[in-house]
Length: 225
Ligand code: ATP
Image 1 (tube, helix red, strand yellow):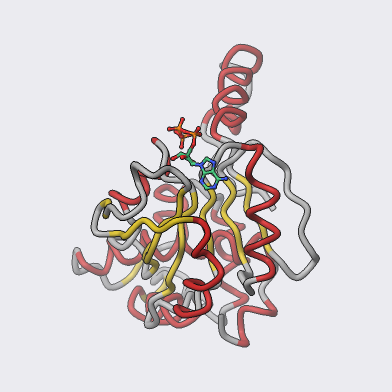
Image 2 (tube, protein in one colour):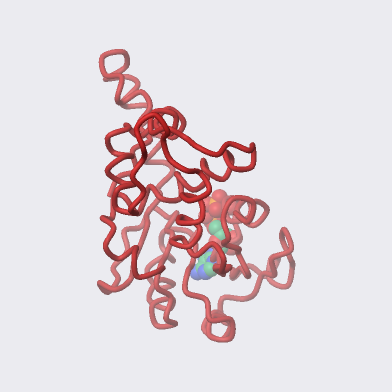
């Protein structure tokens, strides 16, 4: 990340990839400007928030003109380090892990799962979606060789903390945790936790209890802190 991002509030920083994806689509369809209302309708973030977010980047939309798409796009691209490929490792090549290896994020972002790890002999030595699967014993060695700082974890919950400790010792700085386990890490490590079962249960709960009386909850794409 560049220097500029350190001054941007966390909540704004989390919305950057969302803006970036939409602006990329706009730009490839040849659009040169966009209003905060159009952006708001597309990304489902209210336009006051968008204007405030954009003001942090020095992008002040002009009344009746909106924002310049290519300016914003080059700003986001720089800020999100899109010129540089970020390598990622994945640990746990089960159903979910396998799906990620096939998907591999490269279509939308400049991030790529470079290698995967597992303990199952059936999987070690294979390649899934062109990503080689190694034994977990090789984790430290491979991370060091490739200088990788980001990991996706799709192992059973019981294995998560031990693997996390090993990742932290290997200089990994960020972990996308898909296991239900809550992880203990030092302050300088960033964990983003996505518990799909909890998300689904929460969606069903809101549908049952709030459906129809709160439009904000019906399309809650506001990304939490
Ligand atoms: P998923 O939850 O991803 O759909 P699954 O139900 O197919 O997976 P799980 O039992 O959750 O299987 O295991 C996910 C993957 O993690 C499996 O490929 C398993 O071999 C692997 N795994 C289990 N324990 C460890 C461990 N300690 N280290 C690395 N990988 C592990």
